[in-house]
Image 1 (tube, chains in turn cyan, blue):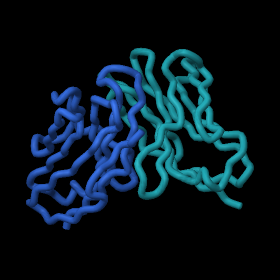
Image 2 (image 1 turned 30 degrees about the vertical axis):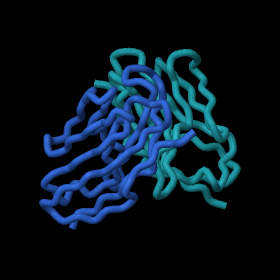
Image 3 (image 1 turned 90 degrees about the vertical axis):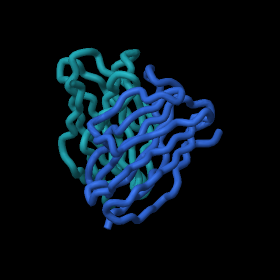
Image 4 (image 1 turned 60 degrees about the vertical axis):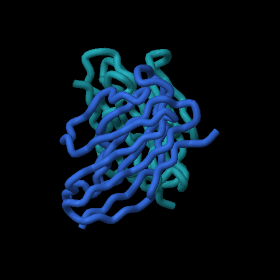
Length: 112
Length: 114
């Protein structure tokens, strides 16, 4: 079964610092992977997706993620954190028929 | 382009009652998926509808049921509500039921069971 594991339920960074949110996947076939962001009292917004076209994927709001098959990882990064990046981030893998299996989420806190 | 809209935004019910949640898909999308997000957890897949037919189901009991209408809007019905059903219920629409098209989420319905 395809699944994802997010390491670190809470991550805190200073404004302007590097953001690194970790996601490892478990899949017997090449996966389709996604990162979503959820702001308080809102639904999920797609940040980026990996569909095997390129290993480095650029998304919205300056985020990017690199697919590393050897490490079964799809970590999310942003060079410089902004206060507006504070939110919960979910990694997800596509199951058959365009259904998503989500990780447990990482709450990102950005401090001055 | 109209996004995914869900109603109501909040709902309070008591144990044993029944509830219906509604979702209007994004314009042009023919697939709707429903997810349950308990507090502090990631969303869990409930089921998906594609062109008015159920197209896959997660690990949820039969008291969770759904419908999709010809205009591709959808309903989630939950019977015999239990305290553990308290959660944010998210609807997501996409262009096709079997592709890598991203799912677009609504803001959810917050269901509280007393």
